[in-house]
Length: 177
Length: 303
Figure (cartoon, each protein chain N blue to C red):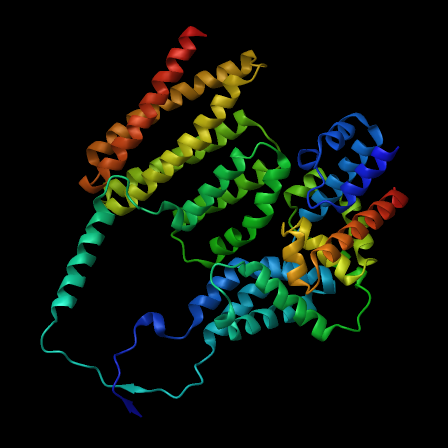
């Protein structure tokens, strides 16, 4: 087929650059969010890939200037709930396996590793939404309003879940020590 | 009792359960004075810190690399199209004007003194800025937040981008320095480590200048200046300002003065051998270094 159009420039070819930049910047936060939901590396990998593929499909709908990270979290959360609606428990064993052999991060110099394992186990007992609210607030520093948008709920509900998370986690950590 | 309940309720609901974010003076004062409520605030803080700094499973980075490789190998599904190029025998006036503007802009970008050499655009530049941001954060909590949000992307960039060997070694050192910065707030130790990094960057600038590479020399000199201003000098100022300035710290401060002098001499040598295009940045760096050195020397004499 011959078209009478100007020759394409390098930047028009492939469409990989926007994906690569998005992946490089947001893969880890998205992976981390999904990992605390699934507790399984394989499921997390599949869901993270699915998230970025969906994001590429919907990139035109993303409003430039708004929070891309929160937008990706929303896609990730929907991907998770689409696939794992019936799951109710984390695989605690696989969380413990993944902890072995990891490069120590700075927080671990301040925190006893046993307490980390206790915290993970305590998180596993929370509901998915409560866990996710806690994670997004503490690790990703999203406001309750942004968290509400990610999880398709209200700001007040996100605040309530945070209350639940803190209360239950503190209770469980206190019982374990 | 009522105030305890209000404080507890606030701590459990708050976006930021810290004393600094208390919505009222009463709650803030109560949090300071009540042991139980203070203890609760501390427990929440430690618990959240522990979660925030949990390591990412190693599978994360492997999965990322695998995902990018897979998509780099995918072939486009659209049928190839043959394009017939338009050929214009004469350039229009607008095209000529656009080219002149582009050339002028490019020349300005290369030669303006407050140049837009975007040192922070490259991986090493971004790592340096990240290290300096960490050093400027005064609490471990703030540093850990910066670490958690930016380290993964930087780590990936270092391991995926095609960096020259020397840049890669420097990048790895900056990543390691990031780890050290979040384990302890120690201005003197930080000044020492930033000094080592600055020395390495200056040596690299020297090599680049000898090869006649003005862009590389300029880039490295800008990095060096940032390390000196925000990494070394800012930390040494904190050390000098601290009330507990013992003999050991004073000796170490004196050593820094000597190293400062050596670096100034290196900059003078660099100025002589550097390509013309990079001399402006070198002179600017020397001015900054001289002013600070003279100030430190005079303070030392008075103190």
